[in-house]
Length: 224
Length: 294
Image 1 (tube, each protein chain N blue to C red):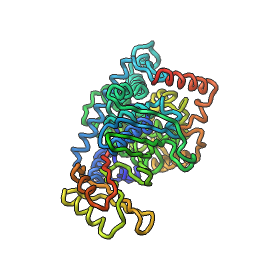
Image 2 (tube, rainbow over the protein chains, first blue to last red; image 1 turned 90 degrees about the vertical axis):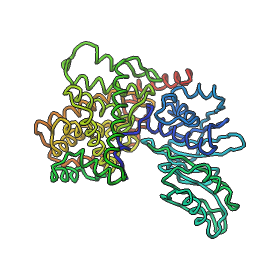
Image 3 (cartoon, one colour; image 1 turned 45 degrees about the horizontal axis):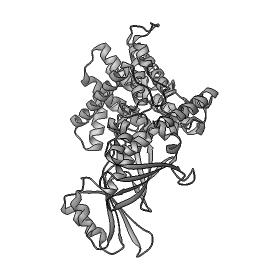
């Protein structure tokens, strides 16, 4: 559904809603995966991100996002210098993540490490600041971050959805959408749950404590 | 949100309301948010727009490549042309100003996109300041602009990569034309004709930025886009109507965008980007950006 405020917005640091604002949001999402500013980040730029990213400040926007800057934060302009002072060790590379017609032209793979947590995310900037995360730790996903989102991989056992829905309900969190996929019967089940309220640490800790859950991530809403 | 401007105009005229009002009601219904909250968000957007206009008119900003910057100040202070002393000249200066801020990684409102972000604030704040129109009316105008942009998004596109520059500065010109026509006292139907008149003037406009950067010609296209909006406003308020209904004009924009060669859709493969000078400047300036570390 198109909203007036999507058209008159977002408020953002220029110059490009796809190459700057969207790139910043992808950085913010990678930050969520390790729960804070990473100590190390490897950023692999694909397609148009690789070709024109420097002129659009895509590098600054992604590093700014990794440090928690929102797309309208003017510190994005100086993000690379700030990262060096704050001890975020980042590295940019140009790469090809697939065939031209299969991978969105504005795609990035971000590998982040923070303490004992390390993860890898692939995401695309679709235009007008909208983003889509397409892969987390090798699992194909579809996360738009238009909502607060919980992503988890669990053993495919009966009642798993009910158990997780109960945990969310107990914390007063309303589910907007839920998608469950699995590679094979009895294989790992993959859940992407979009929720209306921001889940706190306790919610992900409760889900993570379930013995059949392999891992769980919380991604904050990053849309305008 | 409305999928057809004709529907919105019919609803507005049947109930004696403005397009801004029916747009706010539709948004409130769709998003489950009170109208006051939506107007507050639009008010924040307006204050960012005004900030970008003011910042850009100072004239000391340059993009990372150095290709653009300083031209807004020339229009503010430079030698007089035929538009000297008119709100029209001020609107052109403001459009350049916002887009120079955008190219220099300053804060703007993407309305509808970052590449077309200069047109709407230039036309709305330029005309409001010239006529001493208060912010409440400008916020209403932003709602009308949002309605027009939403219809274009649904029937055509708001992305240069999909529809060329007609979908960015062209759509912005349509949004500004319809919104300002209503802000200056035009009826919903006159606002609809203003959108059609602006949009017909930008049909087929290609997206051909040097090196793929939102700089050249984007900065100047915002000024010429604002000029097309001003022409449309003037005609619509004088009672000029456009025979092709506005929704059909917008559909045409979508059809042209779908048929547009990929070279003309933000890839820097054609148009001004592919001229000998365009290629040379892009090569030199991208090298400069890399060497200076941005």
